[in-house]
Every structure is written in C-alpha cells, then in structure tokens.
Length: 140
Image (tube, one colour):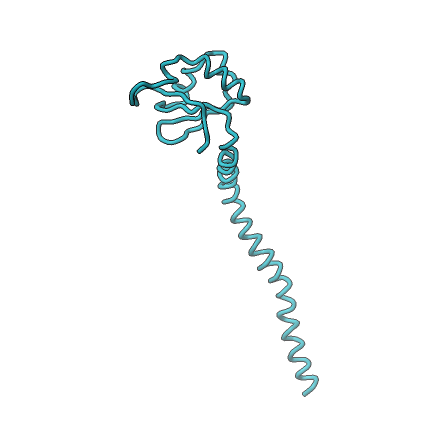
C-alpha cells in the first residue's frame, strides 16, 4: 500500500509536473506569448496607432503649430503659406472636421510663417466659415 500510494501520488504529481512546466511555459509563457503574439500583430497593426496616438496626445501641449480652421485639404492648407514657409512645415495634422494643425520645428519658424500670412486670414470680424482662419495652436 505504501509503494502503491507512493507510486500513485508520484505519477500523479509527475504527470501534472511534467505538463505543468510545459503548460506553465505554454500557458503562462505560451498563452501570454500567444496573447502577446496575437496582441503583437494587433499591437503591430495597432502599435503605430497607439504609438502615434499617444505621441500627438503626449506632444499636443508641445506642438509648435498654427491652427487652421475651414480648410478641407492639406494642399489648401499649404497654399495659404509663403513658399519660404512651406519647406519649414514639419507635418499637417487633421484636427476635427474642417481644421488642420500645421506643425513647425521651432517657434521662430511658426511665428515667421504667421507674420507672413495675410491679415484677412488671421483675424475675423464676423463668423465667416467660408474662409480659412489661422491662429497660433494652443493645446486645450
């Protein structure tokens, strides 16, 4: 009975013990790896999105840019700027339905570009949503 009970528990723990390490590596490592792996392709697919999503969100307060309202395309946005400033545009980001944020590397570039813009697109006397309006970008 001792050897039988010793033998019975021994194969019992041995069987689970043998699968447990592989289950442990499969379940903990494997499942997590599988989750990570399935998350990785998703993560890869989503990776750039969260990576780019947090980037603008994290950097939103650090964005050096001009907020342009009532423009429908990047080209329409670029056309507002002087040739000298077009080359200094780092990127143009869609910000809402009809708005864009034109980003510059430095505040000097941004301010110079803003200074060269015609006055009629920097100020507005009445609510006219047909014309572009440019403001210094301020994260809110």
